[in-house]
Length: 345
Length: 257
Image (cartoon, rainbow over all chains, first blue to last red; front, side, top):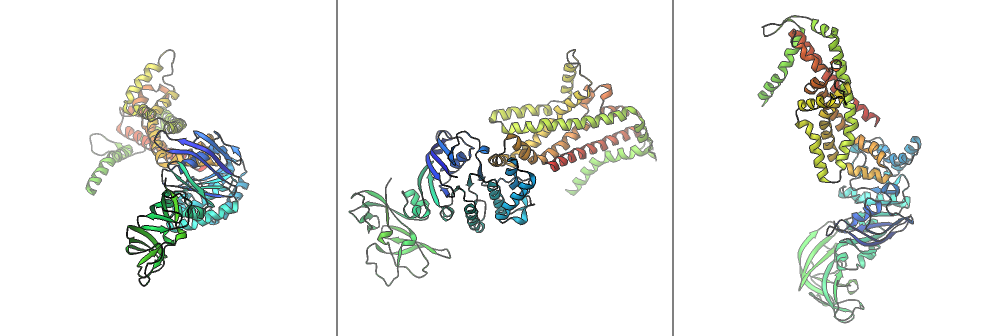
């Protein structure tokens, strides 16, 4: 079923945050990740949808039904909490069977369904363990199974991977995605990890200071950020202040850059955005003579294994670039069609 | 450090050891240790109807106190935890800690004044004794429970239960109560020990037929010292039985949860 919120606002009190006029919808089977820095209101949004907070304004619909003041227990949503919140006195199986018990399903049937769901999340051998006897990743799976076993109308994930180490996080990410696909359930995933959001979601929503800045597919968000904040928050980016100088040119502190005609008026103030991995490398034997090519030197070099990320000083500024190339670099070129101009706020 | 520890333990154990020895001693007058060996004193206590009655009264009062402390203490601790306003929480804390601060004798005189009136002529009733013990022991139980609730992060567990479809009753019985089983057990051990050993209040408010063991025991000290020793040993055993009993009752609650 779908989840949609319209003009949703909530305030914790003057000056202490909340969200402002959020409109967002998640279609059946769609996976939507909400990202933003801490305090941006993403967890508030989740608590509003799940019913733990009541909005000041706006509406929440789940499967078309208006939620109003309906308490969380009547919303039929599977929620996975940041610290899993497994019941410490119940075994994995009892934890998963609990929502079925609340729905009046008989003991034998609910244990059968719980075992089946646990099996689907890869935990068949651990049904009789208490949460304290399970690893972080296993607890995560139990929490996911518990949130899905009663066929909820939507799944809400509140930073579910933040307690796991990097290795398990990547694996769990794929697993959550697979389980979500198998259930075909509308999912809202709140995270501060932009890489996690890009890799897992069909749709990414970026929030800041209680407002929704952009909602789009991961590639769209990355390739066509609507403003400087989104460009900088999602992935890494070179962001320069610029002024449009005729169609196809922009003036920046590092010089006049050639770019695709933007349609922006001459003299408009813009943010010039280009991604580090799109930069073209110039080895010492190639003279930087083409358009958008700059000579310079490496300021800081970071070898990260699969890539090498370096700060490159050119006249007027420092550019961030990424490459798998290991040799000396004497210059950088910025391919004109990778440059995106964002109207300054 | 070990020396200090040994001295302390000796200091702690010596009176009990002496009591144990004395309770089996034939005669004990003006010597360091008694002479002879006998089971006579225990037999005399067993034969004494007032001691037997007191023994039963103490067990009944203790069990009733534990049950009522649980029935009142658990919801009470939960309500304090849930109280929205900080000021209310602090006020209630001060209020329920008062019985610890006030001497039991003050409470006892209060009971006498109120319950020997014509309108409320209940002085001497066993249930009144239970009520008194409840007032004295409840702070210990509530304090233990509150400490546990705070570190359990009960809020999050209840949120999870709520999101899974649990209303208040289900949350309370399926999540809150089982989560509190450990602190309930340790709190009840304290309640039981306090109730069994309580003398001040019991001495003032118990009736002739509802005297708990410590009150009757005092009279033993006017007689033979062997008899007094044996009587005290029985109290010690009673306290241990009560402690183990309440702990296993808490454990049983855990099993059924």
